[in-house]
Image 1 (cartoon, rainbow, N blue to C red):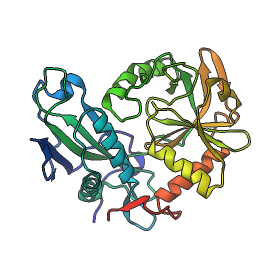
Image 2 (cartoon, rainbow, N blue to C red; image 1 turned 120 degrees about the vertical axis):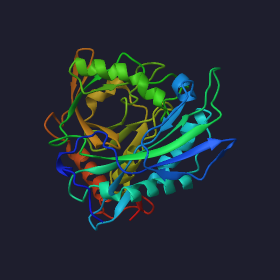
Image 3 (tube, helix red, strand yellow; image 1 turned 180 degrees about the vertical axis):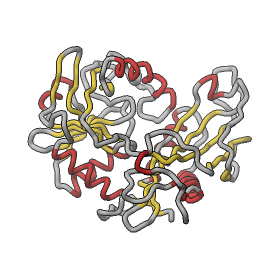
Length: 341
């Protein structure tokens, strides 16, 4: 198979239209068989449920070319399960897990020419999503839905290496108590846009959101879970009912325990104790781990001992091990790597 004529080494993290995408429609209480299409456009009624009441959920995962030349995805079954929970929370029909994984495979295989070669630093980002499609004027769930998947080749999230970020403690809440913070709903990300724009305007890379009830405990950022490392090498991740259950974070916890032999704690993390950690990172699909060098709490600077030049040593080991698993350089746990081609 001949790859597309793309400058893989200079790709940014943005949208590039590919040849095929997947679409399935839900009508009269059932999903149709679904199909690949070359049409990237969606035509909706002006009163569609997604436009009026933000009834939409989505996922994000990547396809890679491994060291031995296979095209694979990483734990797509967990994306499927998370989307099921997201859809159920917003009173949307569940798209079955087995069909989700099959559809991902079909889209990636159909766009294999866009999967970047091994060693290029680029990957194929895959975006499944679902939305209410029929007209809805009263506040209620839609009756019809569309499930779609598109993909786009993307470069590394950080050009020139993952330099530690400077983040601020936000005055905004990411999620309401007993709200939708634990699901991947579009409305959660819309709520974070003002906070991230103002953070950037003030010179920060991201926001640290605190728990909405007491505002004393660390939750997550607008699009990633936190991971901390203590001065004696223990990995600590915040635990909360309003944190999105990151697949990357769950995978890193397993890597820490089973591959690196590190102690791991998943517990409440208080803002007051952040100054005592040695390292901090943000976990997500896009960058795997983004190191954090400094946290600013309303003028009070918390400088992590790992510094502002590079990842801390434990964070680096976690990053290298997980990316090694994803790229086929390190043996993966059973079921983690889904081979497509």
